Length: 144
Image 1 (cartoon, rainbow, N blue to C red):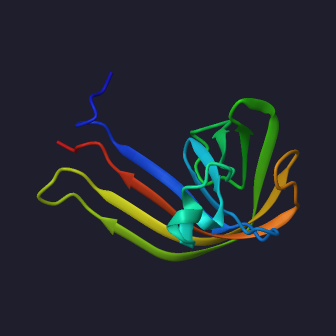
Image 2: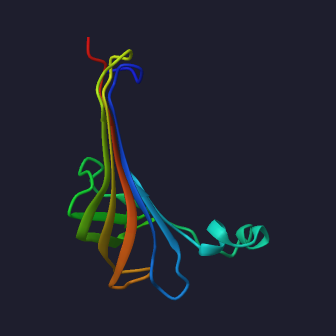
């Protein structure tokens, strides 16, 4: 097994606001998706520490799919509840490659603005079109 200091790194994910009645913030990464009440993100602190607020967490079905055209998540604690994000459009905002220099690794960071079709058989059923800011980050394994 490769140690973390010699392995490459791959991270990706998106953040956006679901256009539903209470407009929760949605954040997903390679392994999970969370739905956060808007009060947690930009409301008063007293609202954010309310135990009655609902946080929903989903797990990615395939953590190696990347920012694929279709991504499926299952709800933590309720695997029958699924959420599907299907890409409708994508625009590259920035794409930066840093070749190996003094460090023996290369870096690739790409930022996108994407629109996904949101469909769920549970919470926030939709369908909704959600605009998201996304990033794909890759750090190569050391090149010798």
